[in-house]
Each structure stands twice: as structure tokens, then as C-alpha cells.
Length: 227
Image (cartoon, rainbow, N blue to C red; front, side):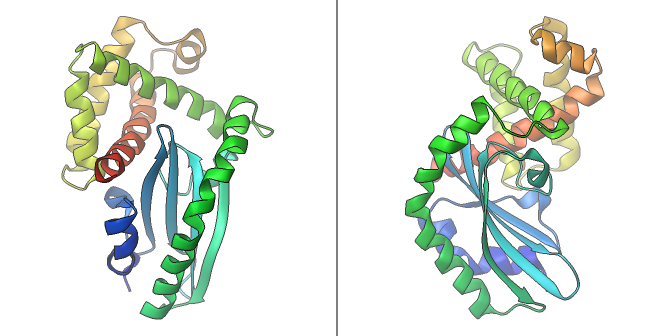
């Protein structure tokens, strides 16, 4: 079984009627995810994971704008809702049931956004992942600002992020664009003091964070265009 192939096919109602988009670049035989833009900086993500050769799980996440992969566990901001678990291989009935549960929950997702925003202002748990995420958010905002100002080719960067998130650009090409825009930001000296101290001018580290920032934004933008 390929989680990517089966999940994307089974969750067609979420894709066609609820603006969920497949996170194709991180899809594989053991992991699949779909995301929907709930608010400008909030994603709702459905993550299916083959935890072992014998068990698969499906969870719904309500999080700030981040890539729907295993790192969500370490962010400790946002909410994870258990949807279902089944022994392998899972069947169509199980997947359809998971989709039905998610659709039933969607009208209630908005109730979790105020406490999520409160956590964003003052997180009870501050992990290293959380600290890096703050810089990730800063990089996203900087690229968006540059795009509005029509500087540094940032508008092109954003379109490439959409193409990559939609599975229409290869990793190497997108990584090169992340490195290019990261270099521009370092040259301009526009990072906050905290981010500048954290990265110490290390282009590789900035590029790694930029990748996550732009990939997540691209998923959200794809979803926005469907709404």
C-alpha cells in the first residue's frame, strides 16, 4: 500500500469541496498529508502515517503555518485530534470513515483558533523547534514584504513556492530559489537582532528554515486559491 496514492484518492471530498491540498513533496509510502488554509497564518492538516508495518494512524492538526510533517510533534503549539487507527493494510471503508470524521469536525475548528493564537503569543512550552519556528515566521514575512515592494525577485520566489508545494517543481530547483532569496535577505541586513544572532550569517541554516517557511506558505496559497 502507498499512503500517498490511497489517501489522496480516498479523500477526494476534502480536496474538491473543502480546499484541502496534498503536500506532495513530503508524500511517500509511509506518510501522506493534506492541508487547508483556515486563516492567513493557520493551517488545518490531515496527516496519515504508517507508524509500523502493522499499524497506520490518521490525525487532524490545527497549527500555525508549518510543514505537515513529523516536526509538528516538537512544535508544541496547536492541537492534534486523533481521527483513526487501523492495522495494515487499511481498506477504503476505513479511509472513507476518516474523511467523514474530518468533515464533521471542520465546523468546530474555529473554536480552537483563539486558544491557538493565545499560545502563539505566550507558548507554555518553548522548545528549540518553537524558537526556530519564530525565525521561520520572520523569514516568511520578509519575503512577503519584499514581494509587495517588488524587490529581490520575491514575487517569483512565492510563485515557485506554490509550484513546489503543488508537486510541479523538483526539490533541487526550489532549494536553489530558497538559497537565492535567503542570500538576498542576509545581504540586506533586515533580520531581527535575535534571528541575526541565531544564524550568524550561516546561509545554509537560513536556507533550511526558508525552505519550511515557503513550502508551508505555498500549501496555504494553493488552498486559498481553491476557496
